[in-house]
Image (cartoon, one colour):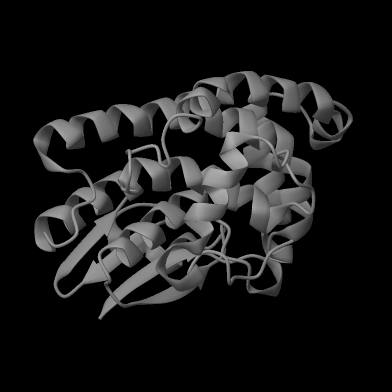
Length: 226
C-alpha cells in the first residue's frame, strides 16, 4: 500500500495543491493509497523523508518527496496508464509544470491567501501567515483589499489555457494526463479553500475543470470543500 503524507486543514480539508498533483497521478494509475494529514508547522512528522515539505509518499522501501519527483517515480515504477507519454512528453510536462509553478501558483496565492488562512488548522495559522506574507511581500489584510486586482492578474495569466481549451478537451489533448493534473491542482486548491467561484460558466476552463472533477468516479469532486 502506498502512503501519502499531505497537508490537513480545518474540517479535514486536504488542501495542498502539490499533493493534489500526486493524488491525481495515483488515481490515474489506479493505485490505492492511504493518506495521512500533516500540519504545515509539524516538520517532525515528515522528518523521515529528509525534507520539510509535502507531498511525501512511501511505496515499499521507497520514500519520495516533491510532487514532480513523485510523478517521475510513479511513471518508472508503475508504467501502466502513462502520465507523460514517453521522454518527449516527460520533458514537455516538466516545462509545463515549471510554467504553472512560476506563472500561476503565486498569482493564485495572492487571490486565495486570506481565505486559506481562515481554513488551515488553527495551529498553522501564524505559520501560514508568515509564509504567505513572505511569498507575496504584503500582508493578508492588504491582499484581502486588493483581491479584484489579483483576480485580474490571475485572469491574464490564464489566457493561454483558455485559448487552448477552446480547441481541445484537455491540456494533453483528447485524454487527460499529468499536465492536466498540474493545472487542475491550482483550481482544486481554490475549490477546497475558498467559497467563491473563480470561473464563469462560459469560460473554457470551467468546462475542463468539470471534466477533470468527474474523472475516476468523481475522485476529486467528492472531498471536503469551502
